[in-house]
Image 1 (cartoon, rainbow, N blue to C red):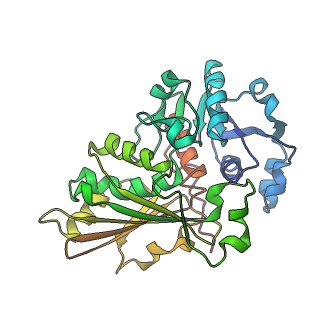
Image 2: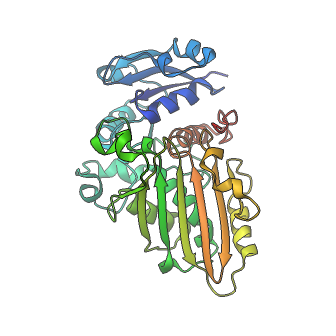
Length: 347
């Protein structure tokens, strides 16, 4: 079988490095090129001798060389404005794009308001597929996949089964989500210094987080239900991981068994999710048990008509790189977990 050629743009960033790491271990692809704004050696990011050896065969080039070295699939781990500029050119050359930025996620919202720039390619935006596995279907003819945001992934994975089954009051949803500092990327800023975040748990972008409209749009698209949720995002003093607390009132007659059945039905046959009650499955609440994997861990409890759901992911994997690989697998009709089963929790 001829291997699919891949490249990663933005390969020095956290998500780009993780994407490259996964592609180097994928049995059906060949990572041939990585691109960044400054000189780098891909092998310098890895500790494994076998990964370093594989990385040494990858050409690491400046961004100016991207369009001269196109591969079958190009992963854009770049700022949204950069993806907006590059994606049309890559697609026009007959290649496929998996975009890890937010440039093509929002269909019906104001990019100027949520991302700070005017979207100038509405035609391509309309054709972009929102790639959240397992909710997204076969993607064989897809030219452009918009990889979901990290918070949006954790929250949508928790809420979509409940809304699809009609178990919760749509107007009662409150989400309190917390992320490790790698979610902000590598760009230096004072508020991300160790001395600023250590010992803190600071809310940020209150009412203004760019993943809010993405969550609302995704849930309506996937379930047909409109949700007017409250969302708070906070920064944890840890490198990786997201834990999203999702709270809602259940509809009359809803039991914990019905909640469990909704998750079981939605994720039947999908190997990269684990779910269960908090009481019987306390490990599902632990970031240490999910960070380093491409899994989503969902736990829940029902008390007095109030439902408590917790969704945990690695923001750099299911929230970015491993989800991007799932989308690659869907495009080429591989099992979605191909190249991801070797991942283990970091502790």
